[in-house]
Image (cartoon, rainbow, N blue to C red):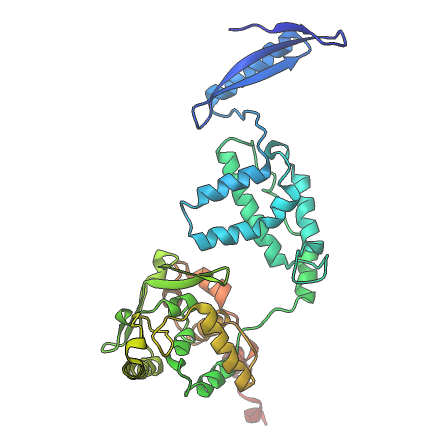
Length: 395
């Protein structure tokens, strides 16, 4: 085993140095660590520590990789597990991290730096779409922190850092309370608003697809429906294909996001009848258009058979909402209204989750069920009975 080498610095100070073999990296390249100390004994002790940790599998070899470089590697790694649209979402979530912390060496990143970064995002992190210094929504900041934690957690697994400096970082409770007081959050439609919309679009050409959106399907699932997925005899609808948008520009066709997303749903009577009429209408349109018609096989198409994307379906719905004088909500938010209606009307949790395409019923209820005052009238009536009857009966 090599002994420390005595070196004399230009200042005349004597130090000791040796090289320690720390194994090989993931590419098979040899890792050597230079140890420099004031005494030969300190050099030997550091060498022994490195060799012990190497044998125990706990050695963290020094490296110069920056946080931005590691995030690039992590995003590439994640491509094995998630779809391209999700990678794009992750990269957008991490853009602030790249801007403000990307230059910091991964091994030098501290918890204080991460906490200060998170606090500054809440205080004024918006990059566009508002006045400079505008506060970011707490939910947005927590999403950024979640992605950063995941990336740093992977760095721990790869033994690039001993522990994650983001593990115990949190958005301050005071910031959460302020965000809740000041930030206006769009509310999903009430049952009455959904019913008004349904009545108002009965003559709309896309009445059937819009009804599918109002029975809990995601917009990408509606646009991905093919006539081969629908059994108009038995009244069932199979969800195996989606057509989503990347950057609201490029259409991406793919299977469902998870295995739970693949499901067969029984069609309620109104959507069932509407789909029969829409199928017949498309047959008439095909006959009228002749060679100009393109038979794509999709349900949501224009008069010439070309498939519509989620942006076009959304804009069509917005025009109908404005015409009816209704609050403009995303079709995805209408999904919240539908699932809430099922929940408060006694649909079992396991059925609710299966209908929504989720594996976890608690997730469905936590994220999609929003109980409004009008949904609690039955509870108020139950209290009347508990108190001895209705006020009229007490008179």
